[in-house]
Length: 193
Image 1: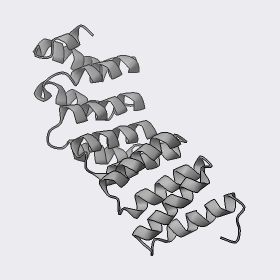
Image 2 (image 1 turned 135 degrees about the horizontal axis):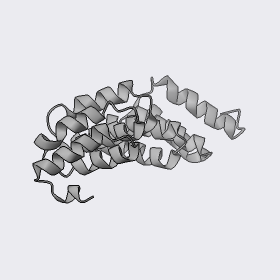
Image 3 (image 1 turned 30 degrees about the vertical axis):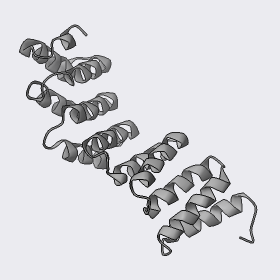
């Protein structure tokens, strides 16, 4: 904490960089990576980039988030790679947070992050991400469909069916919405729909 209070100090940055990549305890590495986010990118970037490959998913998630705060060229590519290659949901969610910070108008990032949250059974958070994607791109049938899935998982079938209907309105050829709407009707035991 004391080192983080000196964001212009090269020696403080070097000490945090060492802690971020060399400390035995993963929480020490997490805190060091997070503290590096307050330093200029030229002092912090190499240690934070190295931390993206740490053995601890908590350190990797912190590194991806800190990369987003540091900004600069290549951050989006690092976030994309982390999403596609990392097995940790938390790291993948951090990758999308970074992508969203880099481009807050990217509906696809909200849809993808919503998928991760829904898969973790965090339906309310997923619904929030899908709602933001819908706000950014109201004609996106995938966002409507996926929010419907989250409502369906919460057993809020009226809202699920309404979202599936909107998905179908956006793209009448989007078969997944028809299938999901049918499953919601089945859950309600309304087999004639």
